[in-house]
Image 1 (cartoon, rainbow, N blue to C red):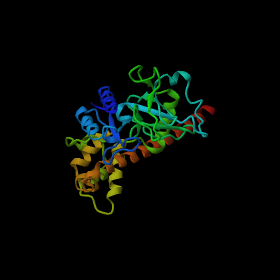
Image 2 (cartoon, helix red, strand yellow; image 1 turned 135 degrees about the vertical axis):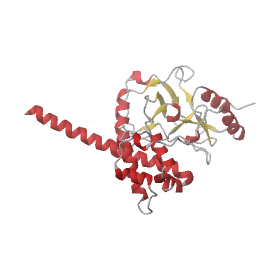
Image 3 (tube, helix red, strand yellow; image 1 turned 180 degrees about the vertical axis):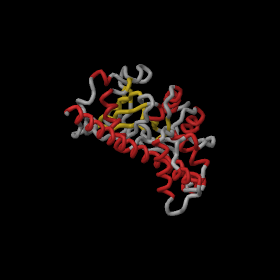
Image 4 (cartoon, one colour; image 1 turned 45 degrees about the horizontal axis):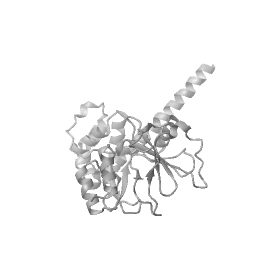
Length: 294
């Protein structure tokens, strides 16, 4: 007979939550299987829990359209009492075995909020894209079971939208570090460079074989230029898959790590551009206020 943990993992996957196994009685993933391997594939889940019947269950939060607020109210440093309105807490709630609480919300449409928490009160953590939480009926390292709060399980109520104040704080936190980028593991069609108004210098960087010693700088220059021209992450991937900047550069050289390298480079470019835009907005606002004052 299949374990309760296996049955729960299957239920979660059937309800569009991407799961992956954790070492029994821990929060630790198995080697080579982590948050980015979270899946809805029932055959894969069956294989994992057949191999490890007592494996705990990890939820790939962002990949499942979920953002989790981890409130450790039992800690002396906890300072999150005023963060949420009582109605904001009427969402799916996971009682962790260690005395904490996971409040699960819907990831805002079109956003990829990660785990950045600057601006949040002490004792509060966030798990979004690139983050995970442990799901019931997993076993905490202290031997206590994770469990859904009565009347607040995903089988009983729907996730609430992310509270507005929390979304504002997380948006600012993302700007400070750059939102996480997740590139699809696909071969893209070759793009036409005339899709963007590229300068001659950027076009040359894209179409000519990169020179060792300056490849990282060239990559970042091209990516930043494309970000400024509203290219999507997949657009940038297509440029690097089909033109010398990537096909004959560091992206190709890094092999299996190329996607992570490119994603990290895009993250930096988007963070830089967001900061520049924020500075520009502040400058224009200051000029406008001076004009009004006159």
